Length: 105
Image (tube, rainbow, N blue to C red; front, top):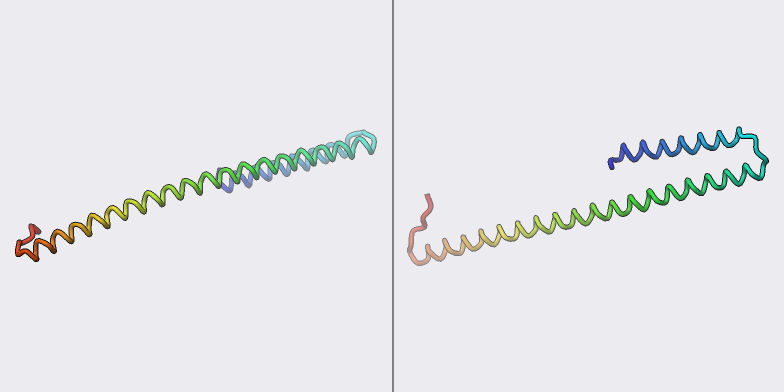
């Protein structure tokens, strides 16, 4: 999920929470009931934020692992190309040392 999408979702949640709080404040309830309902709503919001943070951490871990795998693959490919070039250089220099003309255009 992109930063813009997650930011929009967080604004949506904030608006939802504010709307719920305003609705509760205008509801005809006793003070104790109203305070308990506000506490419950706050706990639900906190739990929702914790869950989103957990999901974000998991996704970041997944991306980091994929990045490490990709870098490892690239490193191996570069190492293989380097070794192939080194071997080709050894062969050419060995042929030149023996007096054989290399087959290079």
